[in-house]
Image (cartoon, rainbow, N blue to C red; front, side, top):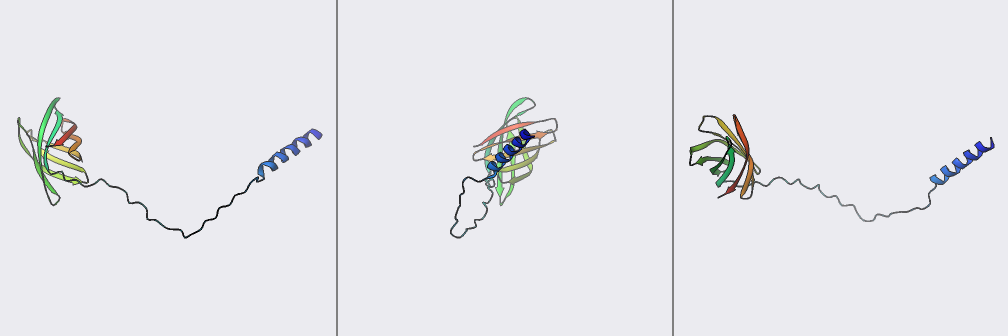
Length: 142
């Protein structure tokens, strides 16, 4: 019984020592708090992609370079893609959203191709697709 009492007293002493505060600190705040507006999120800057571009891609397993003539007036875009081996292909639709553009055009086989472009200064990256083919592409302003 004595041993049990000693263990209980030791446990109570340790618990009591752990719960006592050894030091105190205080902080005084002076002045008037100033509320700041939350930062505005940074969005991709709008670009002006109009101009002449060269685009490199692989179609049907073969490297291909295309010339893109992209015109824009008041946010409405149109243009053509061409290659010495192909007739010029008119854009059916071209929509710019920030620095991204989606273009659809009819290719000589009669199928619709879609290009998703991301403009970064005088360079672009993206991908293209059409039934049975597609892949990555890169480009530069001429």
